Image (cartoon, rainbow, N blue to C red; front, side, top):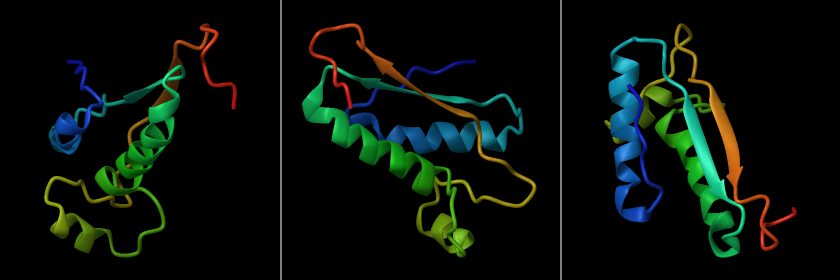
Length: 104
């Protein structure tokens, strides 16, 4: 199955639910495609913040020594264990071919 989850603020809380559901199913078929609108200069920084949050809070990836406590605080997050690897993540820039697209 594939899910197209919007990036607007009102639906971002759903990201953790879908990640948790897929990781609990142990299907090992989950991947995340993160799309950024390269022509929306006002939201590029916001997209970067949300990507960082997705990686470090929802997926609990990184050098957080206390991932179990972090998962307890946010029961939608999935605890990272030594036998569980984070899903593959691809970042795409949409509208790169437009004249208004960000160049850096």
